[in-house]
Image (cartoon, rainbow, N blue to C red; front, side, top):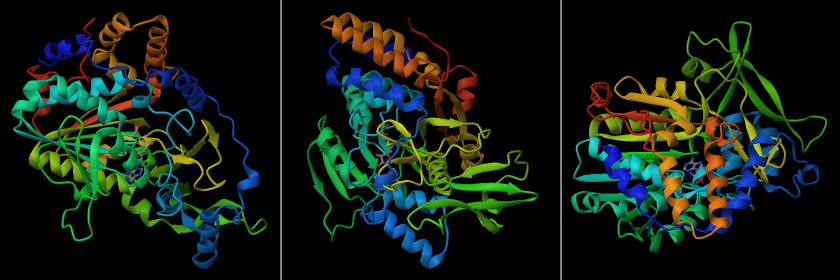
Length: 443
Ligand SMILES: C[S@@+](CC[C@H](N)C(=O)[O-])C[C@H]1O[C@@H](n2cnc3c(N)ncnc32)[C@H](O)[C@@H]1O
């Protein structure tokens, strides 16, 4: 059972502390990022002369008409030349936002334990693809692999390979630096679908891809932390009996200013993605998330494995969640495109509907519940006992508080999982209780 082997890993004190210096400042940053709803003023930079992406978008809109919010978001975040994610590191104290894996090593360690637990429950497959979508700096994967390295039985009996789906050249470079001794860019003539390849510091093969469709098939664990919230959404507004799409246009009175307008005809996106019994008057739908989740569901059904998705989100009850973050402050989404993160809450009901009925789901449950069920309190206790001084202990307590406090990340972030057929029955017979989603506190 998962809690026996995870107990051993939890108690191990030789799991390294990562850069301790980062924790205190990040704790402050997170608090500001998620709770202070103040817009940052950045009017002076919002001109096409100083912002090439704004220039490109205004020219495009003038030439072909208003664009959808999804098209705007895609250009702003992943335009190859000036997209927000493409050429800089936005994570951490000096960036725009911080994420749980950057706050504490415990977060990734518990996800590593979750993977091992599911590998055991799933019948100890002889091979395992570990896929992470949108790995940021690679910190979460680094922490997972350190836990794998402590569990020799897994390494000796299972052929493991690591696959990262990352669109950003800059972040993939940082991931390679953090996770490998050496990596190689794929050559033009290579037939492989990956764009970079290497060996992790713990000796496992690792490959990078632009799209999930390129990742090889097989028994797979998919991990996605704060990935789905970065995918482009369409915004739809109900007007009397029909759904109209919210579009982005150039303000006719102020040429460099973008504004929201209402599309004139009934939206095709709404016909495809909005359910007949929808009660809300405003919805956000994400076709890219639908395609990715269908791919996961098909792969899990055919080859087995599991998916763990963690993000801020809701169960189909929120309306307008589209927002921007810059320097840990809320940022007007239409100002200075390319200089701030754009994000929208993940609609877990939408993901369930799009995944179809060949797979089973657990969650969403809050981050607080998931980490508590995974034994965060015991892990914290061990790390506190082994901390070398008061400062370290203080850092540990502060980062624990940010992850777990319902007023910070504890409630807002949710965990959701997808499994192939059969896993649900095992759980209900209590043969293999599902780690993280079943209440089992070890302290
Ligand atoms: C908000 S960051 C989260 C990073 C990391 N998971 C963490 O929690 O620290 C989003 C990540 O997804 C990547 N990303 C965004 N859109 C993507 C896309 N369409 N395809 C692949 N990766 C994408 C970004 O480059 C970045 O690595």
